[in-house]
Image (cartoon, rainbow, N blue to C red; front, side, top):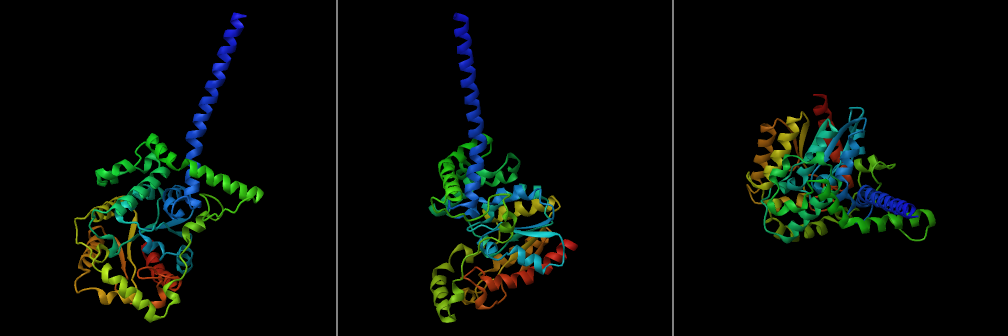
Length: 370
């Protein structure tokens, strides 16, 4: 009886231990998938666009056709329609993907460079306007944005995505970067409850139609995933619905304060954003990847507000980097496009994107063929 009791204790302990190990395994392997899927497809955070960067790049590693990848701020996010550009290109079997992110700046976007190299693209389009050449400043909202972006990106990263960009991270921002699997899992737990709630609501909606649940984008590798990466969900028309007088009044009021901000006062060199650009360009070109620096125009009503030589830092830097790193540039910033092509002060609308397609497609063809 004593021996049988001991055997039962051993068996019970083994069962409990096995269950514990199973729970740990499921906890550490399932939760990250749930959270990443929710970040990409739902309104778990402000926009699913913020969560798609690394899931997109990881899925593009096995994409069969050639790849052109566009990265940068909302300016390139609302300029690049991958399907439209592909339709205007003569090169076959090359797909154009838009990974632009609202609020993105060189400092936040440099994190994806090692992952981009792993996808082995034919070309990388880098958003390069005066809005990316400002000096970092003390700002609670800017710090919160960096914390948010670094945390979201860290959740979906792999250890192989860690690169020399870590040398440029400010000490105050290092806490938001996950350098190990454990740190990554700890960041993931921040969103785990919301992630499971989202998955549950999605299931109840799909299986039983019990609640209304909106899905904002496909999950990684679902049907439509690559189409979404080519042509994201663009904002609805805004200034296009106004007459010229109404648009002028809005821009005139906005530019009175905006013209003094860093985005309209680009520096020549030495800023953290300059260092990030230099890391991106040096790392990509060293890996044998072609780069195109792209500057889109702003609404024509903003230019009268600019002082002479106010944009010299931008003009100098784009030419300097193109020559120094032997990369191509398409500088359309000083071109005057029709008012109807802009959704607002600095973002293209539907007509603007169509014209952008026509302009950039032959440039991409030429770079790839050369």
